[in-house]
Image 1 (cartoon, rainbow, N blue to C red):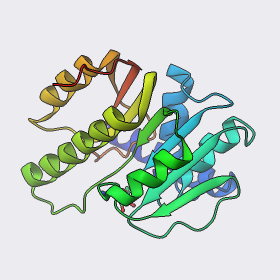
Image 2 (cartoon, protein in one colour):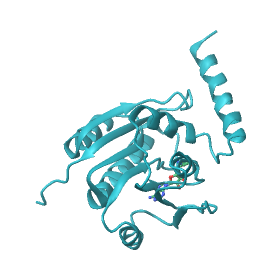
Image 3 (cartoon, rainbow, N blue to C red):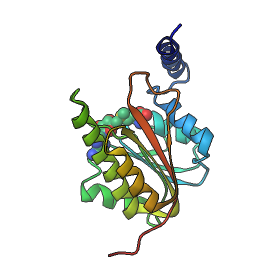
Image 4 (tube, protein in one colour):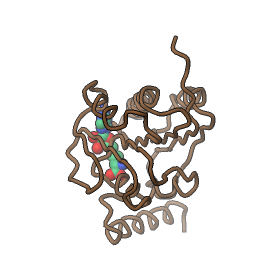
Length: 204
Ligand SMILES: C[S@@+](CC[C@H](N)C(=O)[O-])C[C@H]1O[C@@H](n2cnc3c(N)ncnc32)[C@H](O)[C@@H]1O
C-alpha cells in the first residue's frame, strides 16, 4: 500500500469526522493540529480569523475556549452566523473593514489566523504567487493590528516565494516555523507558517 493510499484514507477519515463533530469543513482539524503543537488558542484572547468561510476555524477556536474569547471572522463570502463570533463580510484589504476590527479590539489582537486562499487557476506559479500575496497581506494586517508578543498562523501554497515570506515573518516575530498538518489533502501544496512573539518594527 502506497503513501498516497494512506493519505486518501486519512482524508476520508477527516471528512467523516467533520460531519460527526458538526464542523463546517474538515479544515478545522488542520487548526486543531497546529494548536495542539503550538498551544496558540487560550481563553480571553482576541482572535482574528482571516478568510474564515465557511467557518470551521472559528468554530474550533470558540470550542477550544468554551466561548471565552473574542473571535472576529472575515471573508469575501457570506458566513452563516456562529453564536459568539463577530462576522464581517468583505475584503480584509478594505480600510473600513480594518477600522471595524480596530473598533472591536482597540488594544490589539492576540492572534491572527489566516487560511485565506486565492481562486486557483491550475497554473502553479500563478497560484503560488497569489497565495504568497495573501500571506503578505496577512502580515501587513499583523503589523497594523497585532499586539506586541502576539501570534500568527498563515496558510501558503509552497512555491519560490516561500523562503522570502519566511524571512519577512522571521524579522517580525521571535519564532517562525513551517508546519504540515496530516489533515491537509495529499495532493495539496499547502503549508502553514506559525509565528510567535510579534515584535513591532520601529516606523521608517
Ligand atoms: C480555504 S477557505 C477558508 C476555510 C476556513 N478556514 C474554514 O475553516 O472554514 C479560504 C477563504 O479565503 C477567503 N479570502 C481570500 N481572499 C480574501 C480577502 N482578501 N479577504 C477576505 N477573505 C478572503 C476566500 O473567500 C475563502 O473563503
